[in-house]
Amino acid sequence: MTEYRTGQGWDVHRIAPGRPLLLGGVRISAEFGFEGHSDADVLAHAITDAILGALALGDIGMHFPDSDPKWKDAGSLLFLKHALTLAAKHDFRPVNIDSTVILERPKLKDYRLAIRQSLAETLDLPLDRISVKFKTAEKVGPVGEGRSAEAQAVVLLRRDSA
Ligand code: C5P
Ligand code: MG
View (spheres, rainbow, N blue to C red):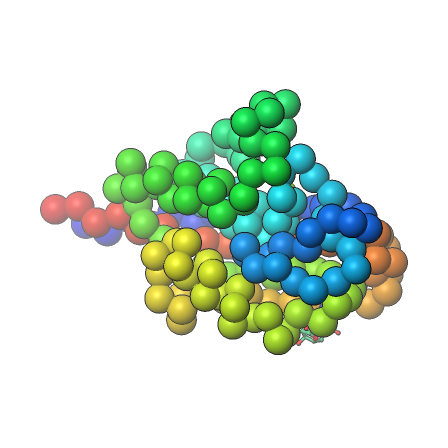
């Protein structure tokens, strides 16, 4: 029997000067980055929450509390790997991931392959199972005004049993 679970994740981070801009573990060249306790990788956080959601295991803040100095400036791919380990403990593995990053600028499309490759490596998935889309917010609202960035992700997990 094969069992499927779907999960959804969303995250937002404030934009601030002098911070790194990381998406899916890839450093993006920009004169600003994302504020946050960890490395503030908004895409990695959304995907981590999607995996935790599929497992009904709470959310990223529960597993990596930002009050815990252990996670200060932690690489967010670590969070993602941890969520994957939790999935594996329940015999689940990802089938595919779809995601969207909403950021007004800079243009991200030239980073798409690098981000997909980074996530594919982290999640041990073939490239064609990882989708990363980009959208502006059409200059409207906090994202459109360049004050924040958001990411959304959905994941499908599967478990095969005899
Ligand atoms: O948001 P909008 O529909 O105008 O985006 C148009 C295109 O620009 C999309 O295909 C998207 O891949 C790309 N884009 C980008 N970097 C962003 C936002 C959008 O490359 N920060
Ligand atoms: Mg976050």
